[in-house]
Length: 131
Length: 260
Image (cartoon, rainbow over all chains, first blue to last red; front, side, top):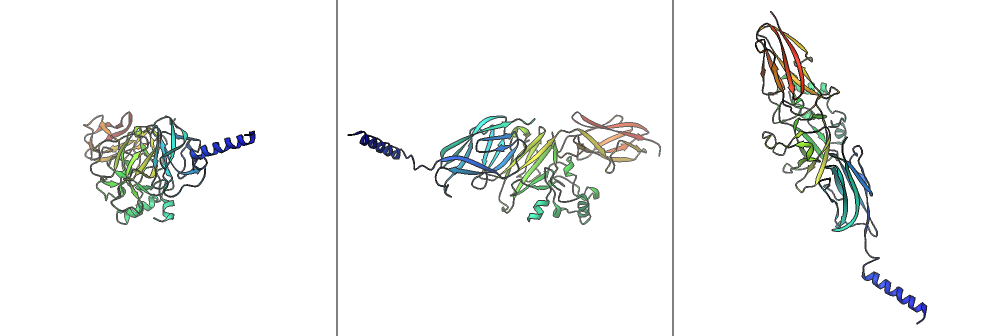
């Protein structure tokens, strides 16, 4: 077997392994963009990379999940969860993709996105003290 | 509710008032019913419905009531406020409800603070108002968001309310601001205290007022059903100082009782 044949064989094996593992066909949640549904209070920002809220204050946001392949379907379930609700509250609104984010106590935590129960990216969150 | 009315609605955060004082007075004259011009509610920030400020004590300047100038309303309890106050005094007791636009009467929404440590929630403080009302005592200065949750726990709307420290008290004889009063023996006058912030604007929330007279033999103090107002009775010639206090904040009024 010459070198060319051996190379092709390795590539074929790699492709087969990748397919077996589901790579290349997975519709992954890459990030979550946000738009504001209420006017942000002072010092409040919500973005794909960070969340900053003052204690006691709240903002309603609409989440825009960015998928690696196809957009989510109506029957897909998208969630945002705070890893520490005692620091940052994240509650589902009364519409899909609508969330209310609020500062409970000062501190740091993360917000994680889920699609159909599968974990996606996390966003760093900080709740700052009101001066 | 149409869009133009929404835009015009009064807001807890200082948006334009829907009803002017003149219009309120007009409404009162027109039958003591200002319900068509209800300022006791403000639209939630998501615009899904209204937050209502419920009166749980007449000792709340926001609950002075629709017909104060015309004394057509005897009680300010178990009613909505005459106006949703733009600010609530730290230490003030108040209650909120939420009504979702388009929801049927059986729909219940709970109003909860974003940060529970900002308020006390006295149990049983308010048995007379609607059972859905949530009662709070403001504990610290700043803006606190209140969330309206439906029965599924979803947040339907939100509203920020500003808590402001009590700076001083004004005393009013249902007319001008009063610093000194002259009476003849046998006469009386009604006084009411108004809590104000450092900028002189009145603060909502029921506070606990303590009234006293330096000389009850000259000017006797009789507290009414609301602790923010008293009747001062001139007993005998002389001078007395009537003092009202909320915690460390006090105000004095000089009462001079002289010959008629």
